[in-house]
Amino acid sequence: MASGERARYWQYPELPGVDLLHARYVRKAFARHTHETFVFAAITEGVEAFHHHDELVHAGPGQIALVNPGTPHTGHAGVPEGWTYRTIYPDAEIVRSIAADTLALRGSVGFTSPVIDDPYAARLVVGVHRAAEEGNALAADSLLRLVTARMLRSHGGLITPLPPRSAGARNAARAREVLEGRMTEPPTLERLAAELDTSPFALLRAFRDTYGMPPHTWLTDARVRRARRLLDAGVPPAEAAAAVGFTDQSHLNRHFTRSVGVPPGAYQRAREAGRPAGTGGARGLRGIG
Image (cartoon, helix red, strand yellow):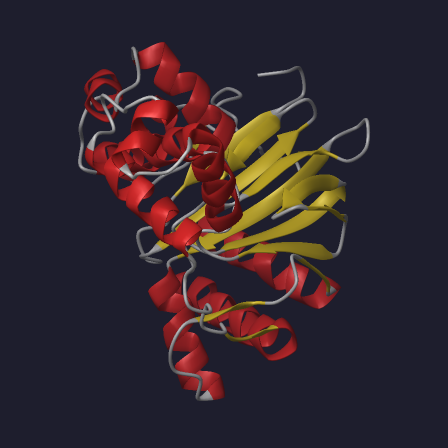
């Protein structure tokens, strides 16, 4: 990684369904990608800039970047010195259960703003990390629920159902199904459009409008997400790379790091051991943030 950059992606076994990332990035740039979880990123130093859908937004100290599952976004430094943050990735079911328990909201919930200015909530996110690092399960679980409920009250609610799909959106959905089923040997855009009885440019436009990215970018993101599930199951990175259609492990490494923030090997070791995995040496991020 670039000089001064550190990242530690890990899980605390007593906090199931939640991933944790503590990182400092300077030249790091996240490719457009999605998560199957929510993202609560509390900025502690510097500024992070990221595209959320088609909007470029910024988050600084005392603010939290919020991303709903399946929402395309990027990430890069908003100032020359980069940014430091502590991020929580709670499973969607956890957030739904907290919404039902505290706000009597049942169904698909999400957040309406990509950035909230709430220093107290940001301290709660940091508190979840520190409690997990200290092995304080009661505090980690309590603080996670407190910060989630607080942000749902101020910037959350039920997600409005999408309107009926147009013909273009239906073609995009069908194209997505094809790409998911033929991930290792995807068709060209021209062949994919021909299979769906549409034109390449019409499909490209419809896919981007529906999923926030063109088919080739979506496919790379889908490959990374599937590789993560394989790594979680203990599949070696080289085998995971081949299974999802990357040319080799270095190809997986490059795209995985651009989306997740750490290489697949470090990610897998953290998942298996339930302890921090670093990309910046054994000391990880001690003393940062």
